[in-house]
Length: 218
Image (cartoon, rainbow, N blue to C red; front, side, top):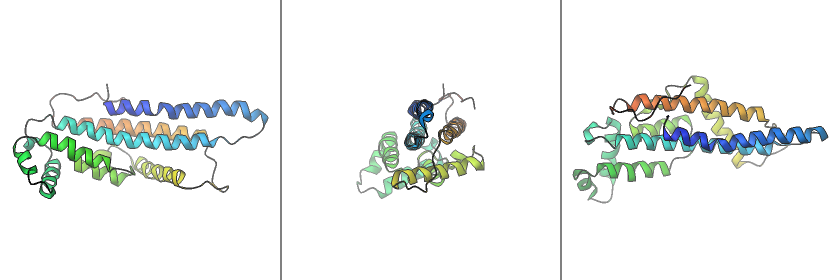
């Protein structure tokens, strides 16, 4: 099976699909009586889809970090992860953090403090932010190297669009959001998530002999 994070993403998008289905059902019912605005459903779908996208990024980084924490020695970690841990210990007000690291508690410190604290502050899942947090937590800035330029643009434009919907009052000049647009976003992000899942599988296999999850059929 793919990563647990991939499975959770699929489950989270089921509600987006339901909104799409509801739109189509209501359209068939009401359009026979005249045009009725239904894009409150599609706009809600955009918010939910972006939430699923952000949660996938957080979850899959946490999942990869958990696999890295199964390594026997801290020296086996990616260079950037070791740098992140060292900087965290250096900057921490508690002088005992260095002792905790010396006493082989690096796994707990890494997962429970560094990874969780960083993820809790993560928002706006645009390309640069995703690359930055991936580099910091799992030592891999190339998390999105599997995507083509159109998909990179898609991520940034979609997250910006989500922000517009969430933070602005709709006015009459705004374009109607039809269900075909929502369906297209769902299909595109399904492909993006599949590719990222496979990219991270290839990455983590450099550090683990066992396969952490199976490849997604793209």
